Length: 200
Image (cartoon, rainbow, N blue to C red; front, side, top):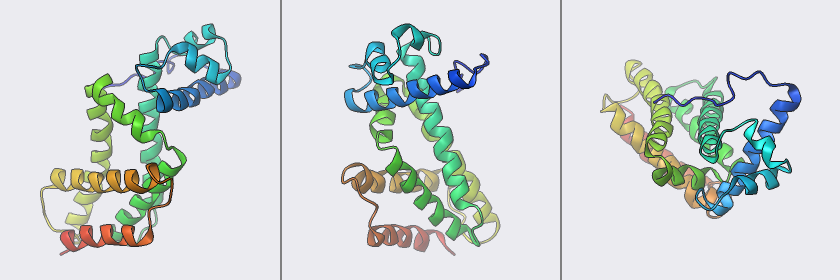
């Protein structure tokens, strides 16, 4: 699936970039609070404190800004995970650091869960694209770990989606529902479960 950045062909001034970002953050807040179907462009414009006409200078429709928000979530989250994994001394340590980076990022973007889950009914293709992108990162890391002899040679796609599920629901349980860090004992239990199953 190719998801087009609706303003990628338009060269924006620094002020334009700032306004576009304000609209995205406003959309994040309103979609997270009201849901996609109950949100209007007026709601987003009011939250961003810009005129409604200004919205259309950057996004043709509500669906376009929603798509771009999912796209930016995907990009920024994957960058944060990749940066968190850099410098690790083993593939196991890289995975641990990647999970930690995920939980830290989600804590700063609490609307991630509700907005992404809304895509199940808003746009299933977009929903699959989002998780497919995350899965590809896991697949790359798992493949390298298997080639290095550190992980068992299990079906990589199955393992990738299992790992995503662990991160998804631990983050939901603690970060999204409780507004807390994932407890150390919960994190350690999950890592033990993962790596006693993966390691040779």
